[in-house]
Length: 413
Image (cartoon, rainbow, N blue to C red; front, side):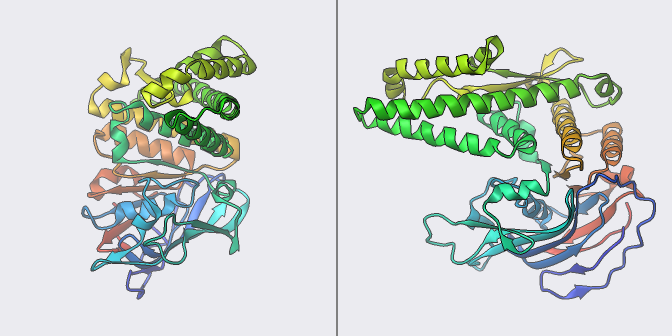
C-alpha cells in the first residue's frame, strides 16, 4: 500500500505508485521499519525502500532476493542473522569479485521513538582472520550488538526451521536461545561466557594439561554461567508454555496448542531445588567427570546437553511425529506466542520476518495467521512465490514484487 519511493539496485529512482494507506490495522504499540537501505548486501548493490508500519508482502520467483531482504533486516538484531552466515559471505559478489564491505541501515519507529540503526562490515573481508561487525545507533558507533535490542525486537521463522522437531537438539537450543534473547539481551553474554569456558576446559583435558587450579576456575565459570542461562531458558519456557496452553490459545485454533518442556540433568536439578544447589551439583559433576570427558572428547553434562521437547496437546503427540503441516502450525503458534509476550514486555510489537510462511498451511490457517498478525499489530515481512497465498491480507498490507534485486509495487493481492 503506501508509500513509497523504491530504488532499484542500479540506484535509479522509481516513481511511487502505491495508493495511500487506508484503514490499516496498525497497533499503537508497533515498532516498525520505515526505510531500509542496503549496500553491497547479497545480490543488492544498493537499494532504498520506504514502507509503512503495516505488514509487507514480498513476492517473486525463487532466487530473486526476497529472503535476502529478510536476512538484511535480521542483521538489525544481535547475532548472526537468520541464515547464521559468516560476515564475509553476505557481501555482494559479482563475477567472482567480492565487495570489500556491506551495510544495512534502517530508519524505524522504535519503542523509544524514531531511531536510525545500522550494521555491517567496513573494509576488506577476504583474507581477514575475523571480520568485525560494526553497529551504529543514530550514526554513532555502539558498544556492541546488544545495543540494537534496546530499540527493536525481531522474531523470524524460516523454511530451514521446518525440520526443527526432526533434527538434533542443537537447533532447538538455538531456537530457544533466540527467544530468550528477546526477553533478556544479557542472555547472549551468559551463553558466550559459558561456551568460552567450556572450550577452554576441553582444550586442557584434550592436551592433558595437569593444571587442576585452572580447571577448577573454568568449571566454576561453567557452573555459574551455565545455571544462569539454564534458569533463563527455564523461565522463558514456562512463560511460553503458559501462553500456549491458555484459554486464549485454545480459542485461537486452527493453530494447535503446544506444550513445551526442557529436558536435561541441569533442568531437573533446577526443578528440584534452588539455583545455588544446582551450581554446586554441576561443579562437582564436572570435577568428577574429567577423565570421562577427556576420553569422550566433550563435556557430557551441562545446559549444552539440554533439549526442548514440544508436544501437540490436542493430539497428545510429540511434535516430531506430527504431519509436516502440523509441525509448521506448531512452529507458528510458538513464534506468535513469543511475539505476544515481547509486546507485553517491551511495550511494542516486534518486527516479524516470516520466510515462505504460507508453505504447508491450508487456507484456514493462512487466514488465522493473518488475523493473529493484524490483531498483534506487528509489522510482518512475509515472502512467497505467489501473492495468492496472502489474500487474507488484502486491504491491510503493502504488496511488493521482487525480481533480480529490484523491488517494485505490486497489486494489492
